[in-house]
Image (cartoon, rainbow, N blue to C red; front, side, top):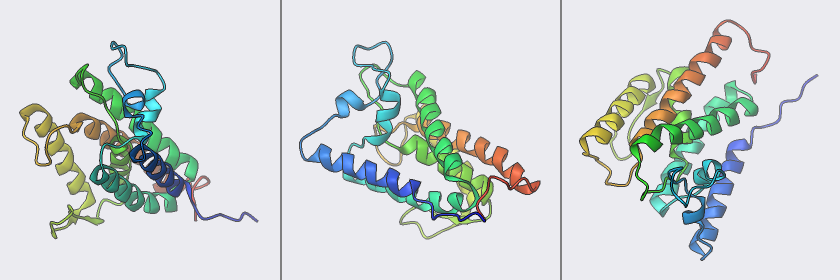
Length: 203
């Protein structure tokens, strides 16, 4: 008999992010060293591909990312193992950064969990396409599959037009990369659910 424990990996991710932010605001600020820089700059280090996902620039930045992480991780962890969830999270974050770099500048560093979080959003839209989603402070919900499609189109528009509804300094293409990767993972693993290949799923 197999006993399934309650998933906790998303809580650990949130706790690590919050702890690092608290340490950062207390005076041990490693954003310069830990953010991802362009590979051709002297500031670049290979470990930044991982560390940039755990650094945030402001209270609203970390609050939004952690809120979204908590919101979208729970339903995904009900249908996937924690191993799959973590693979989705970190691969989305890494590829989001890869997509961003060609659009970045040697004077700008990339930090934040947004790429990984958008991966969860993309996977959620594929696995729960009819779930209602809405933007914060706008009480109008639409099915998740359309919500994510609109968000991706907006991010591409903001990148190439320079018109951003949420200010400057946003890595729009990282968001696009994360959402696309998450959707691809969702399509791949959802096929296993639909065909009854549920050996690796939580009941």
